[in-house]
Image (cartoon, rainbow, N blue to C red; front, side):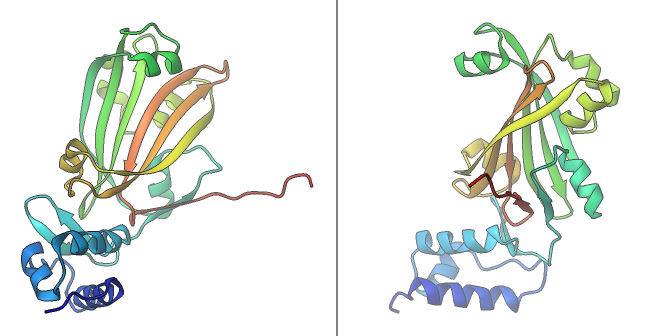
Length: 238
């Protein structure tokens, strides 16, 4: 069988997904690639597009599953609020998986951002955010031990470091964020139950206090299709 043009492949995949019920498992990649007359690499690239739209979910070692119409967490980025607050405002149910609190040592970049010496012990909090279909985000916050003691999280931490610091009374003011599309590493693929190399939306954030000090340095990874972020921009002086 001759190879299908990429556009035809997208049409055929869309038709296959549309006629499958929610929760159905698609044929394995080798079988589906053979059925459609394309290479596995070409098929995988096309499937990433449908996964980014929240139509399918590829689970490491389990296969590719068709999803029902999932509500997306949609929010503007003009107001500083937590993921949990966004989801509650929209009536979307999310939960926090196991929370890992560990000690790491500051490298040169993190030490400069948090204004601590290189190799200074830091507290790192990692957790997975889930909806009914599985993991949809992975959040990692890093703070100085002078700012946060691990025992403080025992009874007062629900998964949002921003909400925790607000409730504690820290004078937070702004967050500076960089947004990038990245490929999932082996570790990220494992915790998010996706394929290595899948596209993720990465937010690297610096949370500032009123004293212009970075109190929290975080990396947040979101599965496209489950999140829709937008920015409202105003006309500047002409």
